[in-house]
Image (cartoon, rainbow, N blue to C red; front, side, top):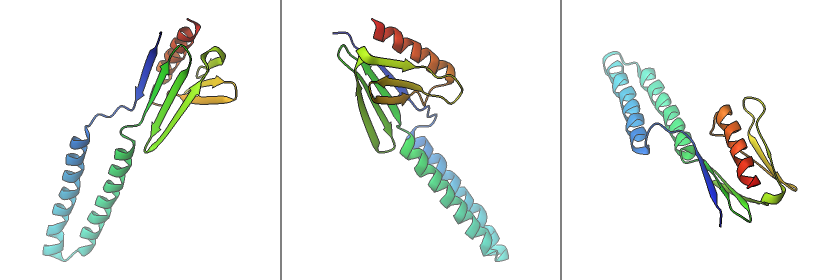
Length: 146
């Protein structure tokens, strides 16, 4: 049985633990920086804005954390092409027939690879550059022809 797999993942430079430490340090630094203004000058608005900024950082952290593990998993077996797309908590699994599969490579920057089989279609390659998308599309075509 011939099987080929591709795993396309988001490029995350920080581990989850490193990201939590960095965000905690930023938020703590904001609060500590604003406290002298409150105690020395009575400027409560500085503390309010520091808390507001820390809340915005926390929202950014939650968005990052939800999408840190996003990926696309493509498996080409003898009888099917299986595509699994994971975005946040949403999982989509699509099964395409390789004998009817058409691979449409991206033409412009921002276009994704379109895999079509009958009435079913899926777009993949959102974590790749345009050049790598084109290479993946060509590699998929070659593997399907085998």
